[in-house]
Amino acid sequence: MRHLIPTVSDTRMLIKASFNAALDGAPSLHIGDTSVRGRMGDTGGEHWHFYVTDLESARRYRLALVGGNGRSLCEPWELATFPAPDARPERFRALFYTCAGGHEALTFLPTATRNRLLRRALSFQPDVAVANGDHVYWDLLSPFNSHLIGGASPQAEKLAGKFDRSDIVLGGNNEAVLKRAAGPQIMPVYGTDFRSTPMFFLQDDHDYFDNDEATDEIITFPPSYFMLQLARATQNLYYPEFLPDVARPLGLPWSSAADRPWGVSESFGTIRYGRLAEILLYDVRRTQTLAGPSAVYLDREVEKWLAARAAASEVTHLVHVPSNPPGWTAGKWGEWYPDVLGRDGKLTVREDKPYWQPGWLKQHDRIMASLSAMRGRAPLVISGDLHAVAIGRMLRSGKLDFTANPVTTVLSGPIGTRPGGWPSGRRGTGALPSAHLDMQELVKPIEQHGFTIVDFTADKIAVRFFKWDVNSQPIEAVDALQPFFAAELTRPV
Image 1 (cartoon, rainbow, N blue to C red):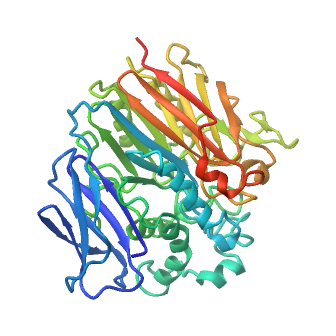
Image 2: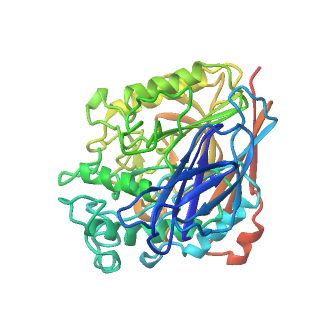
Image 3: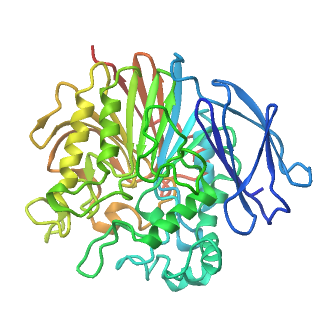
C-alpha cells in the first residue's frame, strides 16, 4: 500500500487508497459485519476507493482491506464516525494547514520534512484534519511560473512527461503524466499516517494546475475544461470528496456528479460534529466569474447555503474555511481585495488591479456581514493560500461595521512551501491587511512552515499556532514543536 486517506460523517465513510502495483480483481473493505467492494479510481487498477453508508454514529469501527484473492492488503486499523447531528459532544479538536504540495525535485520542502511536520500535528490527536488547498504544484500556463519552475519547465517534463491538453486525462499518456506529477506530491507526504484521522481536502488554484494570474496574454481562471479534468482526476485518485450533509443542498455545483459516489460534493464540504461545531469548506476557484460588478467567486446557491447556515442556530460554533483568505492581501490578482503592487513596489488601492472584479469584494462583504451578524457565536474564518501563520480581528469591511461582533480570521500555516514561494520572495511584500479593512492583527503574518490546532467546547474556541523556521531550526525541532501563540474566542452573550 502506498497511501490511505479516509473521510467520515456521522453515518458514512469514504476512503481513497493506492497500491504499488495493479490489483488482480477488485479489493473489498471489511468494516464490522459489512463488506464493501472497491471502485477503481484510475484505469490501471492501482487506485481504489471505498464508500460505506448506513453506519452507526459515534462508533469506532475496525477496518480491513482484502484483495480479490482473499489475502490481506494491509494491517487492520480503526476509524470512528462522527456524533449524530443532534448529539452534544463535550469537545472537538481540528487540525488546519495549507500548501502541503510540491515535487521535492523542484526545490520544495523535502517530503520527509513535510511528513514529519504532519506527524507532529497528529501527535496532538485531532479528531479531523483539514488540508486547505495547493496539494499539487505543477503550473502549466502561468507566464511567470510554468516554464521556469512549473509543470512546463524542462525539469518537470523530464520528471513526468508532457500533457496533451486535447486528450482525455484518465486513460492513455495523460494519466501516466498525472501520476508521475501529482503522486509524489501527495502519497509519500501522507502514507497511511492519517488512516484513523478523517481528512478534508479543499482545492485551490494550483490544484487546477496553474497559478491565479491575469495578463493581456492569459487569464488562468475560471478553470478551463482541461484544468477541471486535472483537478477532478487528482481528487478521484488521491483524496476523498466531501460526504453529504443534511443541511447542504445536494444540487450545489460540482455535487452529486454521476461519476462519483452518491451525493458527494467535489468543492463544498461540511464537517458537522453534533451540535457542538459545524465547519463549512468552500473552493472559490471552480465557480468564479468575470462579470465586473456582478462577478462572484461562489455560485449564488453556494452563497445562499452559507448564509442559511449562519442564520441557523442549532449548532454552537460555526466556522468558515474558504480556499481564498479574507483579511490579508499580497497584491495577487485572484484575491477578494483590490489592493495591488504599485509602481513603487508597495500595496495600494490607488492604482487599478488589471482584470480584478469588484463583484468579488461585494460577495466578500456579504459573507463577512452574515458571520458578524450571528447571535451567540464568535465568527471565525480559517484559510490558507498565503503561506503564512497569522490571526487578526476584522473590525470593518468597507462601510460595514463589525465592532459589535468582530470576525476573527486565521492563516493556518503552510507545510511544503519552497524557498522562493513565500509572498515576500515572489512579490517583494509579505501579506498585509487590505486597505478595504480595519484589522486588529494579533499575530502579523509569519512566513514560516506551520499548522494550527483548534479546540471547540461549549463556551469557547481555543486556537493554538505552531511554526518552524527552516532557516534557523534543526529538523529535530519539529518533533517538539509547541504553540508559539494561543487565542480564545468566547461566545458573545
